[in-house]
Length: 485
Ligand code: G6P
Image (cartoon, rainbow, N blue to C red):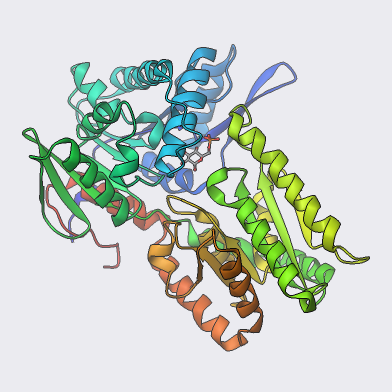
């Protein structure tokens, strides 16, 4: 076992959003810790190494630096806000990131809006993040850049004369070469990614897709090594690329789901649904999540199985997201139409087939739904990983639930043997998977859920951080095992 994660280098984490929520309240700026697994996993590492998190605070105003300083004191690591102006938000965040990279990388061509001004805004905003790192970084810091908003940073840092070691992790899928190569700025993006020392992907499939795009752009490029981390060499430069499936803080979900209040709330929720089979979905309102497809499959189930009327219901939690981007606004209307269509057609007194919730749920409430649901529906049309699938499994200590999982979610790579695997475009197949789960004996459900939990227990978000950092600090290729081997 290597000692590489114990390397004393300071860590600078960079992501588009800082791990906090900054809001205006009663004329003052307020700052709160953001939710999510990434901050849970990275905060202790940052604290240990005396690190720094660079990112966009989302809101701005006088006093921003002061609230960030206060937060830094309490959190034990520094926050360095990057302020984006309205043009950055429109061109870099809403434009290039969410109207080009997001749809393209999830293999949706139609929403892609390849405006050259978006590319300019992307470069400009990436340069702001790079400048913040260049100003704050010391020569032997390790810089860990996250996600598709910031793919140009390693190259820009070098152009600024900085020779940090820089790693990158892509949280979303990397598409097949035939899709990626439609990007007008494909060469600039690939060149920039190759400037990182290590590029991490969610799955080996993403890594293979990236290597294929490199090969198509640079036929002379070569691949070296085997296993989790390999290297590609192109034009005299070697870049290590690897698959690092992200995870969740499994034990914290286990703990929260074991709390008395949680158990009581889940029991109450179950009572409200009686003996009905409860299906559950929770997603940001995003076209990649397959929410309309899921609703269509549910409608198909009710249409094709009248004997199930009154016996099954779907709770759909949909979290508002990226409301300024046109595709997202259109989706809201589409989803609401589908929900009311199903309820209008099938509801009877005392039975509402779809319980639709459109708001951000606090973690405790979400956990209650996970605990109460008989089946969690993850129907992504494309998804880097899908942490809802993992959270559902972590909360199912009772071993009564079934995970219905899209084969197009990154989580499928780890979970496919023990989840009900579906093609989300196939309404009959999804309806069949639900019917089968309703008929599955409890012992079989228990066996599969136990196996899923065993996988998660071993591969949690802390293991993910360790294996990425180990790979980043090491020079070797191959596999990077977990703490316990
Ligand atoms: C995905 C991306 C994240 C992003 C999140 C929320 O999970 O991989 O980088 O932060 O969506 O989207 P938003 O646009 O609100 O940051």
